Length: 340
Image (cartoon, rainbow, N blue to C red; front, side):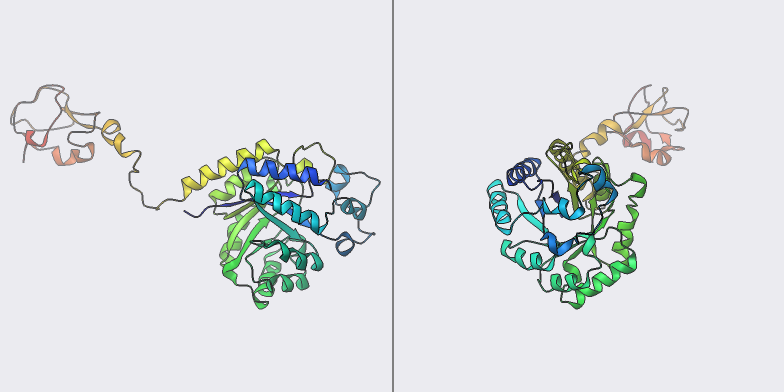
């Protein structure tokens, strides 16, 4: 069975406080996720001071600060991330981070990551994609705000840069925080899979845990979900994130769903239910007294549990046949009672 990879997106929910980041790692490890992911960036390289905030950021952060000022407060140093990665190893949860600029993309090589995660905002950043492809690592590509043609260009850029399509997982995503349920469009995940013959997953920004669970049932191989220590904390992403308890519930539900969907595909009795066949299914019984030579018909037969006699599915083989002996009312029939 292929295990669904669950990424707990801490993002910038540490609020620039490394002690809070350690607590996020504790919560992720307790929830049983595979990875906890942060965001690595140098603010001056990703946001101009003239950039406006997104609408959801205006309602979750100070209205007086610019996007640049907001993001600058959430920036960690590369040394901070070394400390966080070491703590992840201690807590037995894997460390990931998304680089948002070319300098950070080069620096994260120091962390020996399992994946290069490319955020939705970089999907159309051709220079960034080319540099990412040169890493020769498995790539996770988020596609919020994207069209199929833009995804096509991004994948072609990655392939031309040396990335193997077999090492790329494309995440369906919507970048509204929180995403309205009516805008999720999970079917687009399968459209991506069919269009580009790639592994797919889902990066979720809805409230709650239902949609990621549904995505797993639909074939997602990676789930990414924001979480926080406290939804009421000041910051752009807290309100649309899971609590530690919700994260744990999501992980449990995903593990249950993946067990349910990854079977042989053959429709046959399972090991656990085989013992119930005799108990639940029915056998042929005499509904009236039947004398030797009488014809079996629906009027003198009845189907009842247990199913350890002539099975109900064989009734057409019995109807019209003669009784081979006298049979009492309520007696369970055996094949020896039939004159073949």
